[in-house]
Image 1 (cartoon, one colour):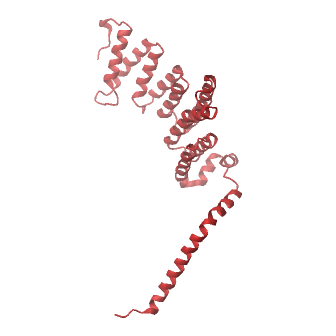
Image 2 (tube, rainbow, N blue to C red):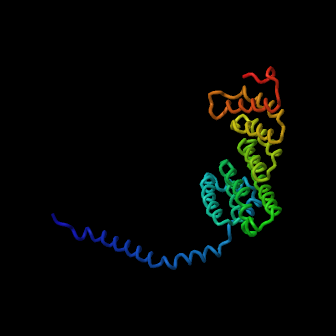
Image 3 (cartoon, rainbow, N blue to C red):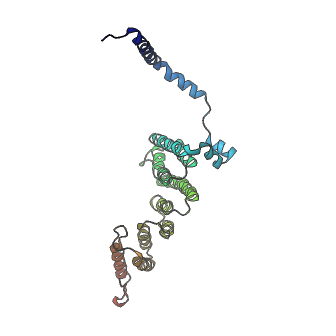
Length: 263
């Protein structure tokens, strides 16, 4: 069988061209990176706030069309990279940018608020000299300032997800865990528990917060009303736990046997 050398000539020519481009690419790579960095440095940065002010958020998001979910995911990945550098202003701006582009995923609102409320006070304390050096009053101020930003951010999320129990619970968590404000936290837990889609634990924690405030009679009345509504075969409902707390409150309140809750 004979090979036609003339027929193979175009193939050899193409192979030589490809190899030549590959070698040229390798040779140019050391200078390509700095060149692109210089070009990017001269370009004006994207100013979403300015664009939003000029056109309105709806128009700004509309310009992205069907790509906003992809763009938001990409910026969220970038947010996590910035978060690892402990750069508070950039992280906070990036968090808000994500939900400005796509406010639909609860994941962005919940995790963004946790970065603001829980991580950023620690960054500020470390920058101010560390836990041993920073006075308690300053630590408290950092907590209050970052909690305020996180709560405002979550309330913005409620504008897109009205009364969503997870967002309401997250506001309660900030009041409880960062601000140590049990009374305010309990109001948010109650508000969340009244939503049809609320997780079962919201009501249990509300009752527990009443107990922490020495409001035992209110907790007892609330749990007695709650127990009959719980599915007894659903492990998440924890009906047995609720009944146990009812019995504990009956002991604490010295409820007579004849007046105690009947299942």
